[in-house]
Image 1: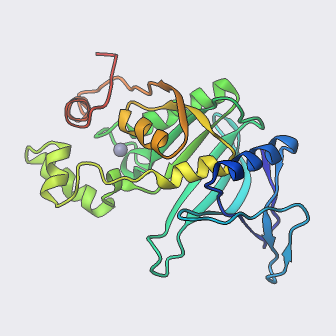
Image 2 (image 1 turned 135 degrees about the vertical axis):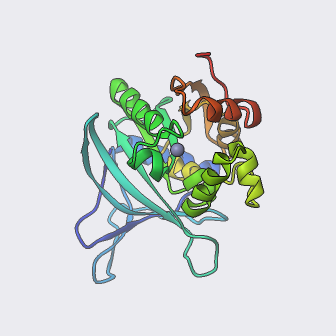
Length: 259
Ligand SMILES: [Zn+2]
């Protein structure tokens, strides 16, 4: 899927929430594999030859960038999304979507991955995040199409510093859930509104969700994205992740088969 955009141009659109609007959005995308947006030039001039911009009742994402994105796994497009205004009207969140393939109809493979600096960047063995990320990209590449939404929600939403504090508590014997709770956080602080709106923005109505977390399936379904299949994204436990994965299974309800 090619998203329009030129250097210096802010590309944005608001997300339709009504069924009719969504259908219309879908039809427009099907008719022309180029998504059309309300556009603003670098000088703030509006140009919207075929653009659309729907009213939004509660949620809104804005696309701020779109670019080619070659990776070790193949050719993606990378799209930057943001939500909220950051002016008190709600917390501003950002996420990127890596999209492979032009046709996202049917039930494309989708992974919603929460940022994990320690795992994704440093290769930490305290968790399975990086392996899950690589597995997801590799499975999407094998299919030739799919979407990975990467959310900035470090440590299941508690933030990087708190996550490091939680690691320290885990070193003294607490499990990942107990550590989060001791720091005053819920076991899982994530909201999945932004990824859902991103999927809708991409014209996706149903997905095959790469996840071990049934709560994610429920979150998507409740927000109007049908999950036709949950595809396991399982990493074999190592001596470092065994306890962590066990806690995820026992306390957070994650599903694993390779045990
Ligand atoms: Zn991690």
